[in-house]
Length: 170
Image (cartoon, rainbow, N blue to C red; front, side, top):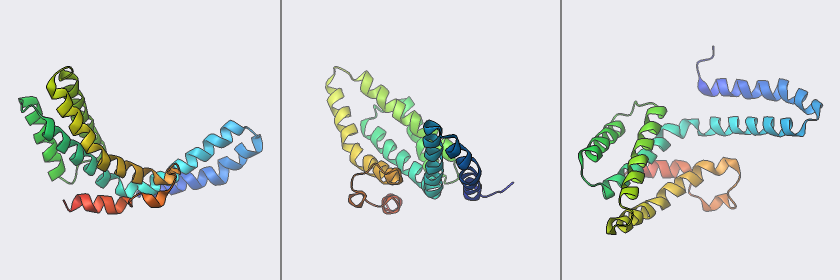
C-alpha cells in the first residue's frame, strides 16, 4: 500500500488514463467516455486542492462560527455549540470530516435561528447578518472552484492560498 494520499490518487488517475480510458474510448460509448474524463478531471482537482483542504475547512468553520456568534440568542445550546466550535478551531489536529460535521451543525443552528425568527423583527437582523457574511465565504468558494473551469475570468478571483493565509492572520 502506498501511504501518501497524493501518490495514491496519482496512481489511480494514471491507471484509469493508461488502462481504462483506451478501452472505453474504443467502445465508442460517448456517455462512458465523458464520465471517465470527468472522473479523471475530478481526481486531478482533488489532488490539487487536498493540501489546502484542512485550512479551507477551518476558515469555513471560523466564518460560520462568527456568523452564529453575531445572531446567537445566548441560550445554552448556542453556548455549547460555540464552545465546541472554538475548541475545534483551537485544536489543529481535528480531521476534515470532524470539521465538516461541526460546520454542518453550526449552519443547521443558524438555519434554525432564522426559521425561529420568521415573522418577527429579529428575522431581518438575522437575514442581514447572513447576507453580510456571504462575500468572504463566496470569495473563498470561488477560489476553491477555479480548477473546475466555470469561472468566466479566473484572474478576477483572489488566489485561494492568499485567502487562506489572510484568514490565518486574523
